[in-house]
Image (cartoon, rainbow, N blue to C red; front, side, top):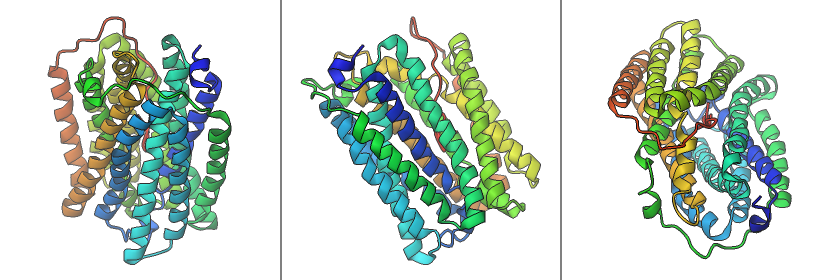
Length: 410
C-alpha cells in the first residue's frame, strides 16, 4: 500500500474525499429549488443560467493551479485552502437569499464563484489523494465509493433545501450546510497528512498527449452539459406549472436518484459494448428526456428530467477508466494533472450549458429550449455512433461520477 509515500492512510483518504464531495454537491444542489423565489434572480432564466455558469467559470480558472499545486506539494494544502471557499460561499449565500437588485445578484455570483474554487480543490486534490494511496487494482472501487457521495449530495441538497426553506425560510438550508462544512473541515485538518514534494512534475502538454484524451474530454463535457442544461430553466418552468419550493427540490432529488441508479448499470454496459456506443445510447435517452421535460404538463416534465439524469450517466460511463489510464501513462503518474484535465472538461460542459439554456429560454421560452436540447442530443448521439470505438487493451469500466448537480458528476 502507498501509505508511507503519502503519510495519509488509504481509508482516511477515501473518507475525506467522500465527505468533501458530498458537502460540495449538497451546497451546489441546495440553490436549485430556491431559484424561483430568489429576488435577485427575479424569474429570469438568463440570470439563473449565469448563476450556474459562474460556478463553472471559477472552477475552470482554479483547477489548473490546483492540479499543479497537488502534483508539486501533495493534496493537503489544496484541500485545506478549499475550506476557505466553502466557508465564504456558505456565508454569502445565506446573506444574499433575501436581497434583490444588483447587490443581491453580486453576492450570489460571488458565492457561486467561491464554491467553484472550493470544488476545484475537492475534486482535483481529493481524487488525486485517493489515487496516490491505493494500488491500481483498487482505485476503481474506492473512487466509485467516494464519487457515490456526489450522488448523495445532489440527491439530498435540493430535497432538504426545499423542505427547510418552506418551513423556516430561505436561510435555513445554509445553517445545515455550515454544520456539514464544519465536519468537513475537521476531517481535512485531522486526517490528511503532509506529502513529500515531487521532484518531477509532468507538464500538462505531456498529459494532453496521453491515450484517448480526446474521447475523455468529449464524453466528460457532454455528460456535464446534459446534467447542467435543465438546472437554470426547469425550476422556473416547474414553478409556473404549480410546483412549490419543496416540490421542485424533490423533483431534482428524484432526477439525481435516477442518475445514481443508472451509473453502475452504465459502467457495466460500457465495459461490454464500448465507450462510444454506450455514450451514444445515453445521448438518445437524454433526447427523449428533453423532449418530455419541456411539455406543459407537470407529470411529463418531471418524467423528462428524471430520464435526462439517467441518460447523462451513460454518456459519462467510461470517463473514470479513461482518466485513470491518462494519469498512469507517465512516470511518475500525473494524478493531479489528469484529474485537472477531467475537471476542466466537466467544467466546460457545466459552464456552457446553463448559459445556452438561459439565453435560449429567454428568447423562445422553455418548451422550445427543450426541443433545441433534444435536437442537439440526437446530433451528439449520431456523431458518437459514427466514431469507431477502440478501447485500450485491458481496460475495465469503473463506477461513474454523478456530479451536478453533479453529478446527477461526473
